[in-house]
Length: 542
Image 1 (cartoon, rainbow, N blue to C red):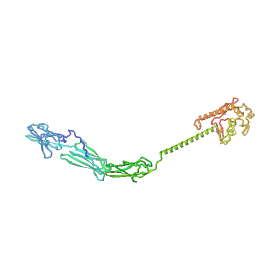
Image 2 (cartoon, helix red, strand yellow):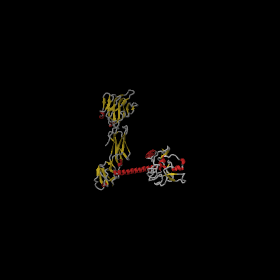
Image 3 (cartoon, helix red, strand yellow):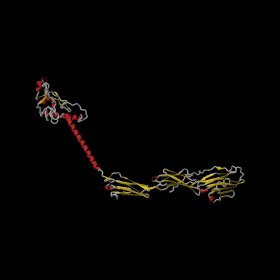
Image 4 (tube, rainbow, N blue to C red):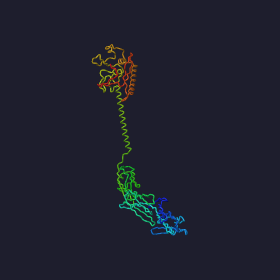
């Protein structure tokens, strides 16, 4: 379909005016314009003036003669001062007028110009005594071309064919057509002249069309004298070809029970394919498959869709098909079961962490008890026998734990202090051995009379059975001392604590006779020896 776009007109004063020709030089005395340009349907003024410098020439009559072609002369207007105006040519009778009723300035106006009005116009005077005097103006008729461009729909092939046309019709002078294109091709141009002097120019663009050329652009550009700027019009090529097809949507993850499996048949062609057909290589489509236009939807994947699907598309130039084989795999593990397994693993790790923490607490507590010096497994600290230590403290026995057995008190054996007391005598026995003595001060007075002094609290406890009130007093002191030891241990770092331990405090009890003696030993009191035994760092040995 041809497209005609309006052209911009040049301004009204655009016609190129020729310089006036002075006919008064020599024998010529008629002044006219050499050349004028005009457009159809417009008007043009043809000026004419007689120049008589001396004033001796007598003007009789003036005529306008039109010469459309060489050798053809037609009188179109006559003016006589007595007989007036005359328009002998019927083609101009209603369109030509004199602008002035004067022999000296017989200019005329031609209206409703036609392309056929082009030619030579001569202003001719009849004078006396010199005879005829004349001047000629050439009228050039211009025509703006009717420009159009159109695409030619073709089918892809192997031969060069016309794919686009461009035309500049009925223009004067003839237009020039050019093509701007990015596709490989060439063009040819032809011209045709009209009876009115206009020229029609046609150009065709050719190439060997392929599917890839469809939609590409070629541009027609028309240049002509009457146009202020070139006329440009792009044309999109239309190349028809059979369809091509592909299948998308298969992700290699069609497992049993899946419900969102979709295949899509994608086709391209010109014209666009409208007929899409799905089939299966194994025969009819499975019952779980639904076709929706170019889509094949599998409602639930099972072994029946473990096949090859074929998509076929068709347009007026042919058909094309594509196939894809789908493979059904085993169902994936239930996400809920995986969550249960993960929860079980995490729970087991937490339980293991709890057990490890409990064991660490028990070990720390056992070490704390050992640091306090409590016997374990029936060991006797006083005698250094039994238990896992398998050794003794040597010949120096700690006086505080001189009793034996698991029920021993701090100051004797059993419920009283009537048991044997072992002392270390350096002065009495050269070998430094332990000897048994009764719960009295016999040895003290016999061997060290100079050191005789009132018995201390420990002596009383070792030598006699205190009364019930005394026992309750010492038992109460013991319980308070144990509670204080617990608080001090926790405050100074506990088991494995990072706090700085303060030096152990000594509790001093005032015994009989006003003398002060150490009677309580706090935490971290015991110290291991190289021979495997454990002794107190703060106890007083005798």
